[in-house]
Length: 362
Length: 192
Image (tube, rainbow over all chains, first blue to last red; front, side, top):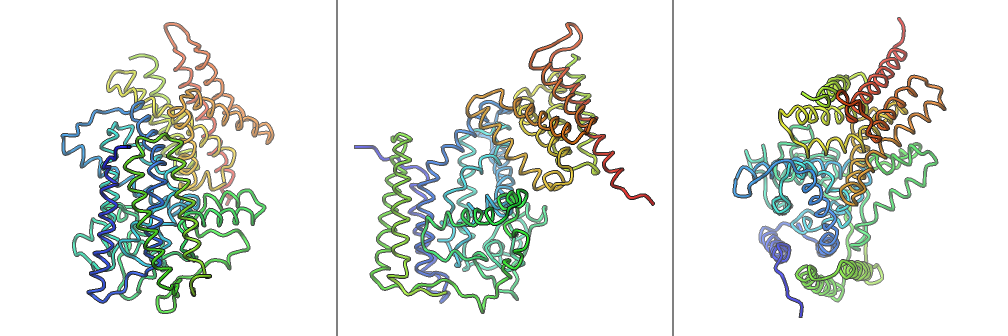
């Protein structure tokens, strides 16, 4: 019998489920409709899938960070010194700002990050909707920490702190927070980040601190007079977690194929997500208005809803088992588990989101 | 003070000059800035003022895998967005740096950086011949000579070490290619 190790993520995942439940209950008590069943289940499934993939994909980041730190790390940092942690957190958050900004402003990287923005709701489950394909490029941005010699353990802990901080800002139940808005990422300024209104596009990239946005001119305050429409301009239109991760790569491929010019093909990969090949400017989608915006919705029978809940919780247990035992697995076995997870979630996603079993509308 | 510190100091001054020139393409400035950072760390290291050998190695590796790519791109395509826009020059920097780090640090293919530098300079030389740009060709040739002397560990005992040749020829190459950018600017300014 394999022994089970309690890793940080093994502790975090049940906590996230509890937070979703808590926010759902508070929202119900306040009479605010911030959750939709299918959207929530999809967000959670995308989150579970990302943990499967990233737990193995993170090996690349950890390996590269460790190799660079060992080879080029120039200074000694004591974990017992609070200054080490403050400095590492500030630098990490600054670098996160650039990772995040690149994730929004370069098509290829947006293809990964779009997954997180594909929800048309904004709640704690949206925080769980993380990309499965971003691990291959993010490590490059954290090289400055490695060459300064910040130890791997501190880098991992700081990364986890930065990630966990960002969970609570995904809520509509908390309003503006006064002077904290000046330097912290808050639910209010993060709502702007998730909006698809014109004034929200490419704004508020910060992880913990909003000072980077203020410094680089990408900060925007929430506007009361213009309600935010959450989601992306070209909606995902699917409840399938695998498609949720891959759909924009196909969009890029279509853009690449649609133009014969090499410079335009490169723009399709590395240009701004709003860029369209010449002659196709009419395809740009205008800013939406909340009153007229139609969300993707499903009228699912209770059997389908039960299938959603059952598979999600089974899958969460499956993930916890994987995370707790994967250290004893060979890399090949880990990849096999991840492939299984992708197939199962993709399959279930297409069944339970299929119009055959539901009546769907937009 | 040894010769490496002096030749690195020379490279630092020239690289800084071009990095601060707002009239030359961004990619050229970015490439010069990386070479300048490597050079100043070299001055600190070889003069014994503040030796940070790992940091110097890192920026030297970055210079090899990315700076020459950026500089060559800026000369070959001076008006393309990869040369003129910070965003696209940075993407080229990130991709070439990532590739270099994966090959050198990840796979232990230590000459990959030098190979990248040499290939980008070779490409620049070929494009200069095709476009009949003599000054460009001499710029790329100067870089290539510096690389070759460094790789062959050529030295003049008591005076110059292999690294000095790399620094000196890179400095001359930067001046030649930088002047090309200035002359292109003069040509593009309409006469009154």
